[in-house]
Every structure is written in structure tokens, then in C-alpha cells.
Length: 262
Length: 302
Image (cartoon, rainbow over all chains, first blue to last red):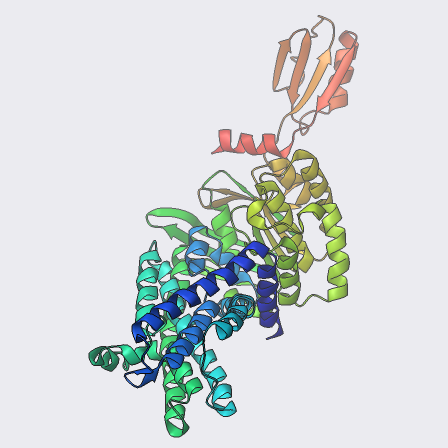
């Protein structure tokens, strides 16, 4: 475990070396927050609530989901590139679990973005507009657990598509489609409250709600008690399903590479 | 350490390895030689576990499936001219730190070893570079340091000298020669036979997926009876050599080149014979090397 944590620390430290990228990341996040909050303000047209959702709730939802999408920012073509240049087999020879290593390195990179890009932008957003405080300290702590589970759901979705590189020459197109679908159906840019009822009914049967929207609802106190537990269970269920799929695909992909030689 | 029995590997219709069998003991230094497409890299890939043979038996470090055992993987390092072990986006130093952590190398030992290797492989100026920003030769030096940092029990080196400057290559070769004292089994492939001759005690010669020779360098030279050459300047006087068991004589620019097998006649017998007929003004003996022998094998024997 210590080795994996060291992998994450190395990636975190590595990111710190790129000062320009670091400052541009903050600027980029602030611009994104300002632009979207302006759009939401215009859509609210001075009304206190739309469909029972206040502007502050919408703004908070957007800021949190932006923070999470910042955490989920890494090279999704990693496995494909490693297969193309042939170095994937050298990775298999390293005495660590490749998938766990990838996860921890991605967490290291994501944490850097959260700490150095997202948090400064949140401080700015607090001065710029009113955001909701957490419903309670308990909800805030459980939200952090839910964030970790949501991250795993999103990471596993990405891993499944990355692993398809064992069979496909390029997964770039599929990855782009996945990212568009995730951005729309998980409520990054438009909170799921405002989605048409038919879409909301479909989303319930997909893992997308578990990514950003569940932690946001827990933070805002929209779900409490048993409902909160059921939402966390749903996140765990999706991790199990997606983890199982990724595991089967990964084993088959590695076997294909080792038997056929690429 | 390594047992390979009747290994076969095909890529589609092409037979790459055909019933290859050998045994390598702990601490042996084996050179695998062959022309392009002979099956050298395929053989190393199979030994490392990253490629599965179509048939046959393989056991490395008492394990048949290396990829499933992290403790066995900790004993094996595979450095290839075409595959990188370094982290592409991290500084070289950070890759080494990851390596030390992964392979559970004691930090004090690793620090000392890194200092020695940094000096030996002249990579001090590269430690803070990103691998993708450095040249192929520099990168290969960094890859070799990564391998020796671990001090593995089995070291597989596949064409690792590509792109390395002659002066640094010479230094690395010296270092590899001295590495003989370590308790590491080394398997080395290269197109440069002089390198193989210097580093390895045993040679496996591959041709079209078959082993055509497996033995020591001396045995190889002996088996294929390479020709020695004696170059003699007799200032235009060419004595009759017909009574001697000489293979061939060339005369060019007043220099007589005599080709012979040491098994048939000693050099001093030839020299005495010439001196009994005329004076010798200059003389040079050229011993056969591995390169010539291998060339001969591929050109004549096959």
C-alpha cells in the first residue's frame, strides 16, 4: 500500500513542477465558474427558485461538480499509448498491480488539481456569489465518502474504455462520446433537477447519477437517513458492477497480449 | 534458474521458435545471437513471462507463470531497446525512487548504488530530465541504471546499447564485465558480437527459430575451426609453402597473408619455415574473433 501512496505523491509533486500550467489551471477554473454562474443567474431571471431549487443550490451544485471533474483529470489514453509503443508489457513486469498503480497515480494528479486549481477557485467563487453551506457536519463527512465512491465509478468507466485498446486501434472516439455523455447525464453543467422527467427516469438505471449528483445531494441535505444509505449502496453497487466488468476485460486483454504477443 | 524445453512459438504461419530447449544455471552469463528474425527477442519475451509459448515447458526461478507472482517479478529485470521501464512523464530521479519503493530496495543501499551508477553511466545531468525529452542513447543509459539499481537475480538485456556513444559504451562494457562478480544471471542479446564475446561465457546461436549452437565461446571457436592469419613482409621474396598444411595464401602489395588452422599447424612452425627460406622484415598475427566465426557459420555452414 505504501508503494501505491508513494506513486500518488510522486505524481502530485511532478505536477507542482509545471508552474505555468498550475497558474493557468486556476485562471481556467475561475473563468469557468464565472461564465456558468452568469448563465445560471440569467436563467433564474431574478427568481428566488426554479422548480423548488434556489440559485444558491444550483451554484453550489455546479461548483462541487466542477471540483470533482477537476479531480478526475488525467491521461485517458495512457493504456492505449502504452499498447501502441509496446511498453505495456514492461509495466506487467513491475512487481505491483498495474491497475492499482494507475488508480493511485490518477488520484495523485487529481488531488493536485483539487488543492491547487479548484480550492483557490472556490475561495474566489465565495466572494463572487452566495454558496450553500453543508447541511450538517455529518452530511459533509458522508459527502466526502460519497465523493470517493463517485470518483471510483467515473474512474472505472474510463478504465473500461481504456482497456478496449487491447482490441481496438484507437479508443479516442469512444472516450470522447463517454465524456460527453458523462458531462450531460451526471449533471456537471446542468444539475439533474432540471432534466426532463423521462431523462431522469432513465438516469436512475445508469451509474451517472452516482458520480457527481449523489455527493451534491448529500452535501445539500436533500437526502438524509435511510435514503442516504441507499444512495451510498447504489454507488457501491455500481463500483461492483463496473469493477467486475473492468476486471474481466483487463484479464482477457492481458491474456490476449501475452498469448498473441500484441 | 531457467529451464526451457521444446518451446515453440508461431506468429500466424511464421515459425519463430521451433522446439527450443536449454538450461541456464544461476550466475551464468549467456549471449543469444542470431540474425534479424532469428527469434532472439521472442525468446527473451517468453523467458520474462510477457509472452506465452504455443507449446513446451518453461520454468524461471521455480515459477511457470512469472506475471502472477510479485516476489518473482522483484528478481527479474528486462531492459529492451524498444520498451521503456521509466515513467514517461516523471523526472528520471522520480522513476528511480518509484523503482526503489517497488522493488523494496533498502534506501541507504539504493542511495549508495545510485551514486555509483550515476557516475559509471554518466547520467548525473539527466536525473532531473523527463525521459521523453532526452536522446535514445541517454535514455538507454537511464534504463540500464534502473535495472542495476535493483540488483536483480535475472537480468535480461535486449539490444540495450543502441544509440549509445562509443566512449560511453566502452565504459558501460567495462562495468558489465566487472559485474561478473555479482550473483546475477545475465542473458544478453546484441548484434554486436564483440560485446557478447566480452560479457558472456556461453553462447546460444539461433537461426530461424532453431538453436544451432549452445556452448562456450571457446567451444564455438574450436568447433567451427576459424582461420588464423599471419601477415608477413618478406620484401618481395615468397618462400614455397606447399609442404605445410596451410589453407590459403594471399599476396598483396608485397605482403604475404597466410591463413591456417591452429589445430593443423602452430604459428611458430610457419615462422621457422619462412625464416629458413628468407628474412622477415615485419610480421603480424590476427586471431579469429567471434564475429568472423559467426559470419562463417551463417555464410558457409547453413
